[in-house]
Length: 309
Image (cartoon, rainbow, N blue to C red; front, top):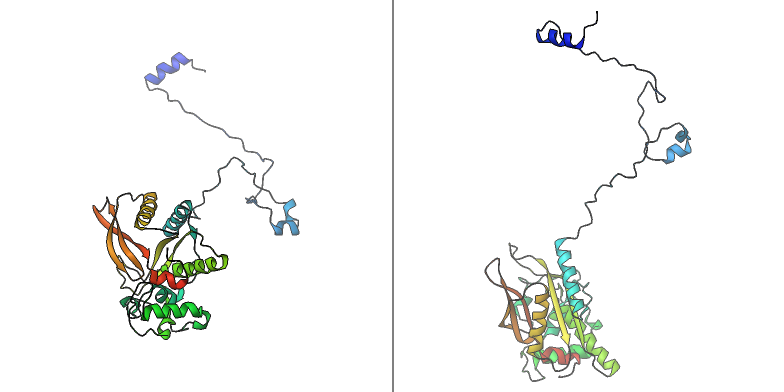
């Protein structure tokens, strides 16, 4: 006998009846019924094509709205990123990049051409990596007239200088080293500028820069490595003075965020005047040395064939 909703409610309150819910399902074979579960193919492979298996394989539907996975590769190394930023700054300032792929250099271009005496402490094995194979460069490939002028300015002086007054040795200049500074690149470039002036009969102002590795026989610690990068720029023009140098340096460092810059007198064998460059570091709360600079000496430039002014 069917019980009405009102009577059922009263019986539930008196706990004389309880409601039970029963679900029924009907199972039937569908269009994709199979006794074994088959994995759907996602790619049309060579094997499926050659064996005609593609006719009997079920392919998974493509979801063209699905997002592609993010790629995590292709990032620049922080050092390469800094090099790239410096290169862009130099180019915007009108500089042209010098070829810097000569890691192995002769002592002549690294030291002697820069009017650095052969007994200078920087040329000692404690500071420089000397090669054993090959140990020497072929001096026959160097310009003989330029080589003689370099020897003479070291031994006897010239161009207003007394020189160093020692017996300059070709064998010392022929020793192969890992370049200790990118100024070796600048010395070769300035010689090319002098030869170009000789060919064309006129001097053309130029600006060059380099950013590359140099090598020092250093005791490795948290502030020193045997291999590091050096950034260098040079400007060749007539009637340049210290004010031009200071302005160029300040402009470069301001473009990398170092606007509080000061200079301190220093000594370099190949520049006079010479200056160390310091920038104030807000995080450290002190002045930090960030570079070296100077105007190339006549004893370096005049033997190359560059004019006095």
